[in-house]
Image (tube, rainbow, N blue to C red; front, side, top):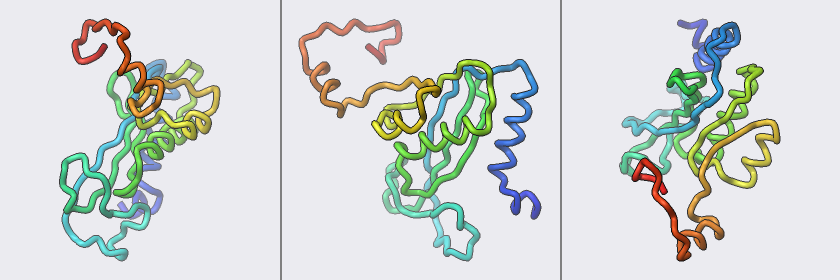
Amino acid sequence: MDSIAEYGPTQLFNEIVSNCLNSTEFGSHSIHVDTTNFSVTGKYEPDFGTEEIKITYGPPKDGRWDLKRFVLGMASNQHGIPLFLQTFSGNESDKETLRTIIENLNKNLKSDEKVYHVADSAFYTRNNLQSVGQHTFWITHVPSTIKEAKELLASEYQINPCTDDRYS
């Protein structure tokens, strides 16, 4: 356990997954990237061993503004198998963490396949799209805060529903 802690459990997990997938024909052509955060209680003083991340206040996904938190980012393939995990400080922005996960995953996972990274609209920023490079393929939706998206949503344009009534 001490050796794993010294090496880094996240780094070890990511290397094991990468080595396993690189030696199989299993493939990962669609990688889903997302984050969540966990509310925690306690003081988490600096000597508690949390130097890599800061357990602090940040936007809660559970509505508990009174609690500190940390963020967990994960990437899984089209079969739901986790490929990459990384923890972040509790006040980290999804806009930053999603890009970081994709960049780190691309460093670790070597694939001859065309790989698409699927993320929510927080990924859609000028900086992210420029940073991941032209050889990284991604799928996301434009946030409704973008001028053109606002105009389209406010227009009289007929939007046809798809088979899943949650989307149009």
